[in-house]
Length: 243
Image (cartoon, rainbow, N blue to C red):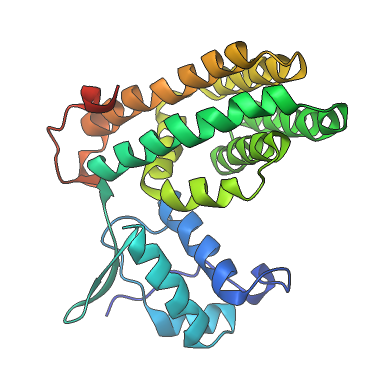
């Protein structure tokens, strides 16, 4: 079996959440960033050795990632990273377009001044990452911003629902950043959303968030053209199906 790359170390784990949850996030990030590209084998003994863990939390993480179609388990052949499945990208888009859109409106309605420091710090870090064109940091901060929206809406746990349902979509979003080079566009949109939240402007925040959502469709087309080997299934599916 192909040797698993050295990606992890025990220092990446702490006691804040379960080992299975932390291993899930580490593997998910590696898949989304293409440190583990499609068809890469998931070598359990190597991952366990790198993290200093037993196989139990790793297998729990693998099962969750398989449910999200980020990993495929073939009992006779092994466990591998799945390709990006276009229909599941669109399914993730639907979830953001309904649940997260509603949360964005609630965040504007329920915004309090004590949220300001968190948003301003998030935007400060985003601007610095955009300047450096640090795609991994910027993508993480992008998600942090949207998690803050869930918190300010009054439903912080809703982020976990969104996060666990949008793995395939996140792969498209993450790969589009360096291809499109739109760091400053995303930063400006987040700044606008924050301004609308502070003014309790539900329609304004929703409008800018919709612009962000719609950018996914062009990102899919860019990947279809420039990195078709990352994609699988329904290659000719019309993204207008869910517009």
